[in-house]
Length: 240
Image 1 (cartoon, rainbow, N blue to C red):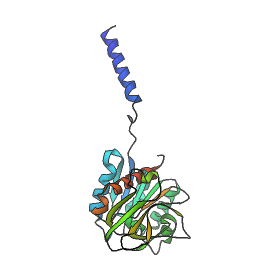
Image 2: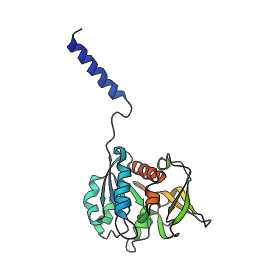
Image 3: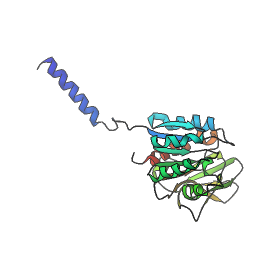
Image 4: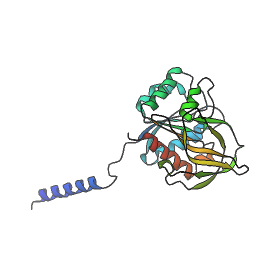
C-alpha cells in the first residue's frame, strides 16, 4: 500500500468520523434584536451588557442592542427574535404595524420586564394582543420566590423554586385579550397574592413569551434567570 493511498484513507476516515459526531455541525447563531432604553432601569448595564453576554455565550445567539426604537423597522427583516425590554415609546405607526407583521409571519417575540408594563395609552393593541394583559403596579423592590408551574422548553434546567430580589410585577391577564399559559409564578413573602412571572402569550401566530423578572443584578446575574432567557430565545426562534 503506497504512502499516498494510506494518507488518503486516514483523511477520509477522519472526515467521516467528524461528520458522524453529534453536534459536530453547529447551528447558526440565533439573530436577536434587543431593544431597551428609558427610565427606571440601568439598561446599558443589565440589558446591553449582561443579557447580551448571557445570550451570546457559547455562540447561542448574535445579539444587536439598541436604545433607539426608530431603528427597529429597518432591522426586523434580518432577525429571528425581537426581544423588547424598552421602557420608552415605540411611537412610529409603521414600526408598530411591522412588529405585528413580524409575529404574524411566525417569528419570535420575547417581552422582558419593562416591556410588560401598560406604557402605551395610544397603543392598546400591544398589551391586549401581544402581552395578553400587563402590569400597572409592583411590590416594593425586595425578596420573593419564583415557582415553576409547568414543564416546558423555556423552564428546562431551571430549579422548581428559586429566590431573588426584584420588583414583583402585578401581571394581570386581560380577559378580552390573548390568553396566556403560565409557566412560573411569583409570590411575595408578605402576601398570599400570586402573579404570572414567566408565561406564553397564545397569540394566533408566531411565538410570544413574557418574562416579568429583570430589574437589576439580583436577577440578571443569577443562573435561573440566565437559563430562562437563553431557553426563551431558543424557543421563540422555533424552526429557523
